[in-house]
Image 1: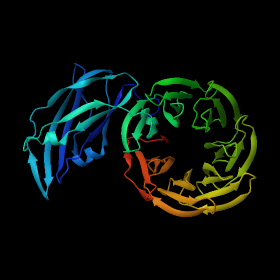
Image 2: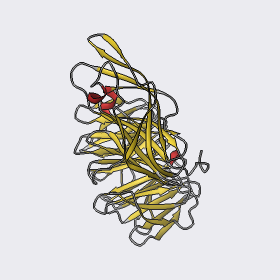
Image 3: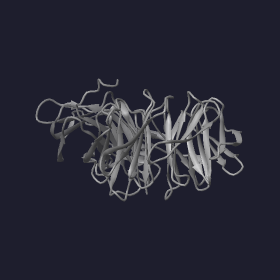
Image 4: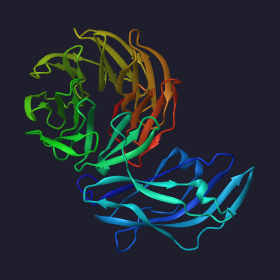
Length: 438
């Protein structure tokens, strides 16, 4: 799919609504949702879908369509069967025989390269007002992203899109288009900036958190296809890995210049800036090492031999923790280099996140997230998630942990209060990275 992706605008169609109250549940078949810019009607659904009032109340992504650029002014719905479920019985409603057409309150303007969400809001009360006739009480509106608070950003490289999720509701509230396969991201609320590594163009794009406008495109000289990016705590430097060449770059985000570079020779997989240890830790699965670099000059300070196939690395309380993928362990290392301890954590650990004095370990092959006490490397709990959890981020205010499903099409959600799996967020596309702002 890479490189052949159409630049035509993409429209993600989300369903929203309000629960009707009472014990009635309504389901309706949406045979067609179409929009028009004055010419032929353009379909937003690949096939008819049956949706329920419960799904509308929770919110869901129905489908995603590529459409021609233009200014769309009208919408029409074709309704199939509609049913009320109540007290164990079903009542079939009369649905409109002809498509129901409305002008859009605000025209939907789409340009090439756009990726946007539209919301089909279902007014359940109005649609049942003349029961047993079912009225098509649907309104179509464009995304309105809330102010920059309590949001999660998720990159989906295959569809050149960053999805935005409200962490107070765990539902999609918008999307931004970003051509060239956006992968690693870092969100800075203070600077109102989302930094995204764009793989195919070897650039770091700085977008405004409040509106998605591109403020800057920082070219990474010499890099051809950078594979991973980490940003320091101040948001001043981006550390970029190019796996194929073994290069590590430091990019000054303030000036947009290349400040340092080093060739490590092995295929580096992952890096993390560890402020407490004042190092950049780079893991290489191939060489079974974690290399500690001076974050300013990128000179090698130390090389630590670790367990089989190291991937994710995290620092906590003067100690490095390494996810050792093929060994199924987390290793604990003093920065002096000696191994302190190793603990079996689950199948194929790939990432480690430190939050609230706990290590969260994404077990990509086992389909679980392990909770590990760092001091003793004691596994407190292993929560089965399904899928293949990868990059993680936490909404501390809402007590959610989000993990991208690297083999699936959405976000895994873990409720940290109950330590149980919450309802996942379907993106209908494979996610790469997630970042949260409180």
